Image (tube, rainbow, N blue to C red):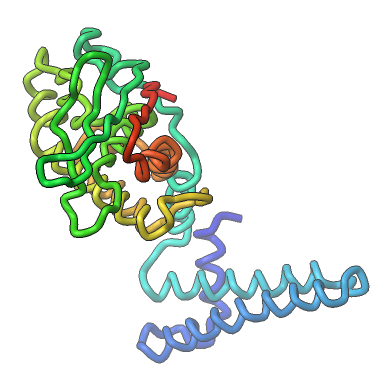
Length: 282
């Protein structure tokens, strides 16, 4: 049976078929009650074990009641259950399935591609005011400026470029890394403007600021294997206008966790340089 067929059939047994606020409230409360009944049946199974011989039949019944209330509520709100199911499947696939991360710039000359593999160092130092600094180096080339934490506290933000490198490696995207490494796609003026230009750079820097703030409030992601969906949802919304919009929330989660693994030690490094390996498309 299709969801849409089931949804139409539920109208025949709906005793509050109206769409007034009270009718909707009755069904919403019914949904909450039936969800509680599902939990109750499973609690009984945990308590009684195999002695609760009818627990699967009871669970089927209670889950069916949840489905009935879901279908009737959708109808009252002029939503289609088939469409709800498709949207939910798309959402969960985006959250948990990776795209495979093929490079996004294969069609460009090699000197305009993000390096497929590179080893970059974060070299710590101290500025004229005694503030800790870090600067990224690729071989004998300095990339970007010496950075401080630009903060009242020593929180390691001077090493935040590790996030840009992780995005380049995992997502195949990082306009900031392209600029720092001299890999902008100038052979294609439109790509240079829309994908590698100022707006894309601002988007990425904003994402890094959010990811870093999230990391600092979660012990720099030490021992963390999953990120909050709200953070990933905001990120995927921000990148809709640019090429990395094809990547999923699962891809962004992997990239952020990869950054924490490569950069976690860098946050506390003050006396020796640390390094990060960029392997694009992995």
